[in-house]
Length: 185
Image 1 (cartoon, rainbow, N blue to C red):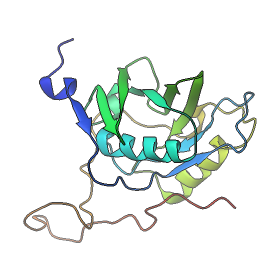
Image 2 (image 1 turned 180 degrees about the horizontal axis):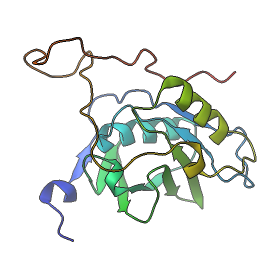
Image 3 (image 1 turned 90 degrees about the vertical axis):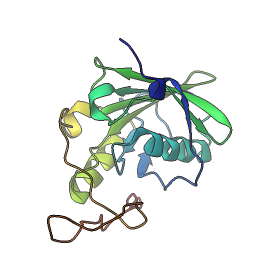
């Protein structure tokens, strides 16, 4: 497979990434199938992976070196992302389900996260993240929520997006009323 120059370059996260909508098991359990749930806000891997790596690093999960994702679930496919002075390699696989992200790093670090589709409802995403973050959970990511691969609707225009011009089809842009992850109960 030929990769474009854009895919081969290292994408650097320059502005402060948005807070990741992430929920992890506490404490981590080696008996659990999943280590938590992640609900990206978009299908842009640079933006979303920068926020994920930042959040995992802040929780002292260890040094993250690699992330494995399903190729068809994302809009582009960079192989390297620079976050806070480190480079994280990204692997794109068709054999990995779109509902799973595998994060690896030093000292046998491995984090398996259920990936909830960005367009999931708040209620469905919250339920999936709670189920994925239960200590000693036995649920597989594929059983939480299905992420349909293939064509995706165009993301809504949000505040702060660098877009010129107005809506051409009328109506109002939709905004996520809950931009951050739910607080654990």
